[in-house]
Image 1 (cartoon, one colour):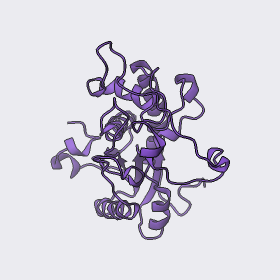
Image 2 (cartoon, one colour):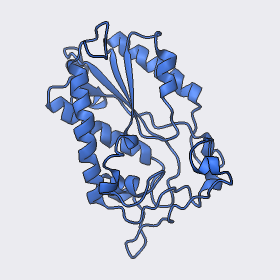
Image 3 (cartoon, one colour):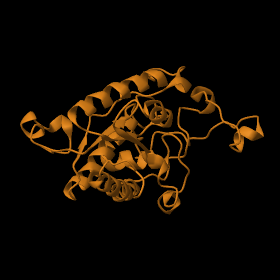
Image 4 (spheres, helix red, strand yellow):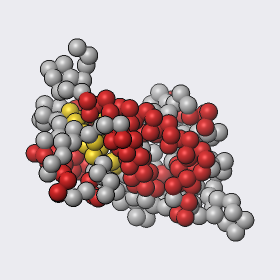
Length: 261
């Protein structure tokens, strides 16, 4: 039994434990270029959640990892087979119900650990503010690496590129498809540019239809991915996120929380 993982833990343990923080991971079920499995985001959420909670637990953090939700918002992949969609309003209700369950258990510090770019959870935090006594945080783990990203990776990442492929090579290499010569069975992740400069420059946003944007759902070149890069990335995630969990576990919820006294 790993007591920081709820699905492995027994009632004989939880009934006498005083967990302070719950981590609720979110993945997705969607295609990832030709070489990565549909469950890539879920596998990532599982392994990252497990590693950061283990490190936090070993340092005295009273943290527990909930089972990963394996579905997310897929409206921009609606034309692709088995892109299993939950609308944002559905995700909100799922989170609302699970937060209520955690509140009844006595957990008031909750981290939503997001592994899917199609999920936008900041509106969820705003929606639930004032409706729950729990304090909710959200982390899109793939967005916390800007200052170190290009020290590890060569190509920019969007979907099924170098970063995600490296993580899967490090922790689930049996699920990464390669050719007979050992090279990735993947295209180069090239995407179609918008006809509008404002969109290309990022001044204007939109929902991108993935079947038009990409060749085979990949956005980002995975060709230089490696298991070593995936492990280096994981060490950085463990360092940063486990520290947050330890600090969050030790912090009292007072009138000024989460701000300094």
